[in-house]
Image (cartoon, rainbow, N blue to C red; front, side, top):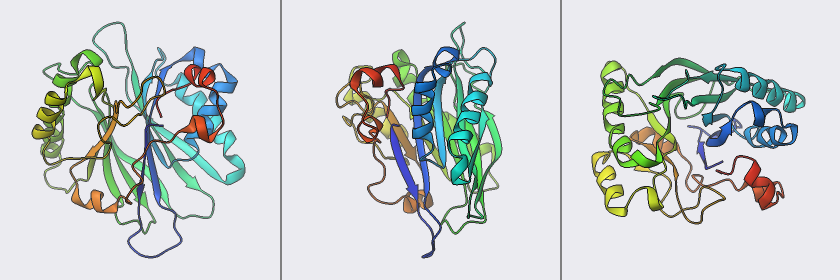
Length: 278
């Protein structure tokens, strides 16, 4: 799990904070979903979150893999009175290589009136074909909540390693396009996922160039902060937001990597076979 974000309540209540994460499950297709040990580890990880953005789903049947995952996840959390559902994108990509985005979210929590539901979803139109896998955009509404924000938009992204600069600069167009579509309503937007935004994929000068173009955004994962197990001190995975209200709702010091390998006592060899982006 490459980061954790907590959204706080607006008053002192017993309602738990909202926990959001992002997860590149690396070639998540029929082979990986058929491995019960790996799926159990993935369920352990996902069960800690209210909403998770997932990247790199490889499935020719669109939702075959995700449906199995949700069924296994709901079986895993059944005794806790929790139930998950999902929102999923089409298969995306110019070539025969295609990926799918998904959001996994809790829509039932035992003892809580809170309900999380997607109220709209879309894929960026990508008319100029800048993105190979254009962002998957979902607006979430949280019902029966005391959280300081009850409606926000998450943009799920997996940038191509060879085109990190071009695609990250184009995120400006995505945000402007989305706001133009929704000009009558205030939106709280965060972009999250596998940006490949560090080390050999993009220079420090080009990172600064992107930040200048997205100057109204706050970056919650600093450069040279390890978000994968296979590299040291490379912050490939990011979350950024341009909403002051969303920024104020995020609890300080919760935007961090979840080292599930340490948490679950996994060996490096096993973790390499599972999703290795935290």
